[in-house]
Image: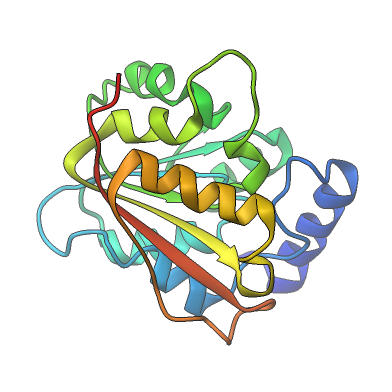
Length: 202
C-alpha cells in the first residue's frame, strides 16, 4: 500500500505543478473523509460518484462505506493522480475528465442517475464560465430525487467571497444545504456541506 508520506509528496508536487487544478497541498484526513462519505446508504446498491479524488483519501472512505456494494466512479482531471488512483484502487472505476462533463462521462458507463456525489473539487471549479451550465446545476441534474452532494470547505476561509458564492450556488441547486460539525482533526480544519434534494432546474 502506498505510504501516507508518498501520497503527501505526490499531492504537493501536483499542487506546485498546477495549483489551480489541485484543491489542497496535502491529502484530507480520515475524520473528514468519513464525514464526506456519511450520506452513502448502508443498504442496497448505491451509485456513488467521486469528483477530484486526488490520491484517494475520500476513495478509501467511500469503499469502506460501500463494503463491496453498488458502483463507485471516480472522476479525476489530473492524469498523474488518475493513474495513481487506478493502481491503488483497482476496484474503482476511474474516469479522466472534468466535472462539467459528468453527464457524458456517466453515459459512457451506462449510468443514468447517481445516489451520492462526493466532491473534493476546489471552489474555483464551481465558478468557471465556459458557456456550460453552472456546475452545481450539472451535478444536481444527475442525482436521484433523494440524492446528496457533499462538498468540503476549510473552516478559516468559509466566509471568504469564493466560499460564500459556493454556498449560494449550492442553495440554488438544492432544497436543503446544511453544514456538518467542524472537523478539527483535519489539517487545516474543515466543514462539510450536505446538499440534499436537487431542484428541478431548466
